[in-house]
Length: 130
Image (cartoon, one colour):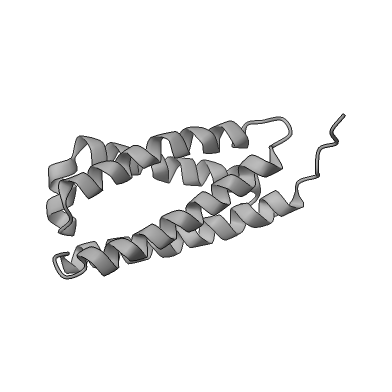
């Protein structure tokens, strides 16, 4: 049995989103300086992490996880990946080498999580409607 089942993947994703929230909201100036990004971009990224983490935990701990919500999380992660590459395209000239590496690597990790979540969602049974 793989550790990357839907529940574990959602929990790992929620932990990373929570860490993002804490770092980007409570250490905005430091993170912005290290990455070479505007503080507003860092703050917005952090605030996106909190509701994302809550949704992921909600789905992870449902008795019968919602296929629709699991797919929504996977699609949201794909949106995050696209936004990460947009940040690189828009701000790459002012970013530090560390910032470029961090944004690129986290985008690849989030893409991996999205794939695991999509596979997990696909394996869920469709609930019958009355």
